[in-house]
Length: 99
Image (cartoon, rainbow, N blue to C red):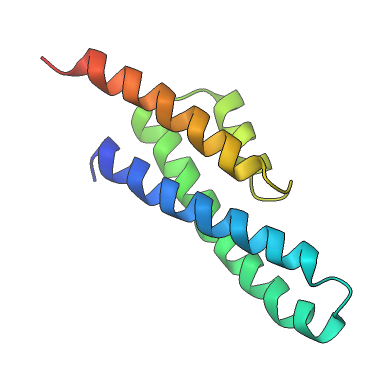
């Protein structure tokens, strides 16, 4: 898998997990709904963590970047901020690597 493909998968999952986290927080007062949405977010978060780790390893990003990515899955709205930051950083890296 290329770095570009790993970035695309990470970006998709970052948005999905970010939206799901907001939905989880919005449904906390509705216990029955939250009991359904919470585990779905948890499962997606595990997939998001795998995609984040894959991108960090392939692109040789630092541990602080991975920590920011991990935080994006459990602090509301952080996933969107971290995704933009990582994408811009990767765009600069990928542009400098091309011939």
